[in-house]
Image 1 (tube, rainbow, N blue to C red):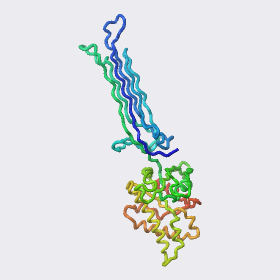
Image 2: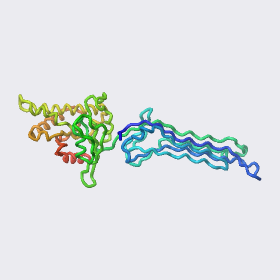
Image 3: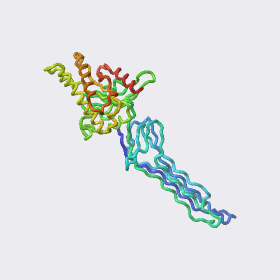
Image 4: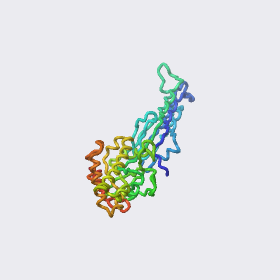
Length: 363
């Protein structure tokens, strides 16, 4: 099923039914007087969140929702039937906005929440209501009120505790498959992940959290390069960002001849730092608040350095120094003691990462 996270729809409540103009006509009862009934109330359009939906796919094919009109009143003081309400189901995490100005009207954060988006029109009163001592035969009744109409924009933001971000092929999909029971598509070419994936990470009995795998970012995403900023809204609700860096970028520096001690370590750390800042810049361009989230920095593919463990440790220490000297926008207290190193392929360090995330989420 195609992942749809945005939709535009039009909703219309039902009109109220008109009141009735009627006079009592029975044998042996002359001048029976007015007996017109009231019109029925128009139906309303109600939104309800459900955990049984994961996308806004249904709104791709149906973009207009009309509630039932109220029925006409009739003689003998019979009121018209009320129009039936209609319920529109949306996934948990859906935000409903006014299409004209972008104002947020309702945010569905829990399962089973309901919101009346447009109310049906009130039914008109029959001519019975307009009788007075000097006006005993009114020949008019109220028309029903028109129901409300709105044009809405629906936007889905997945609800997750932690999100995985990084360049394409950094190993985000492999990591979420290691951490949880999720089975996203994994391949060795860029942009394998085209839509966000959710996975539930079990820490212990009755302890778990949700992690989201966000499609890869590249420099210039704010200009539409790669997949652009299309899916970054899904990390706006998350508490922690896991910034995954690809350890293969260090391989070129493991074999370079050192003209002086530590040159390869410094250059490797500088390359990782450059990649890290490039992704942070894209986050800030989308929403400055994303760059201020708590984050865990992780270097993936540590299994490539089994023969050179000291090199990777030295790079991590040097990378930490670069982070501490970085721009003021990077919160010092949120930085980990040093970047974590893991191997999604072998599973090394993944359990430690889960424990770090759970500790951060629990505080």
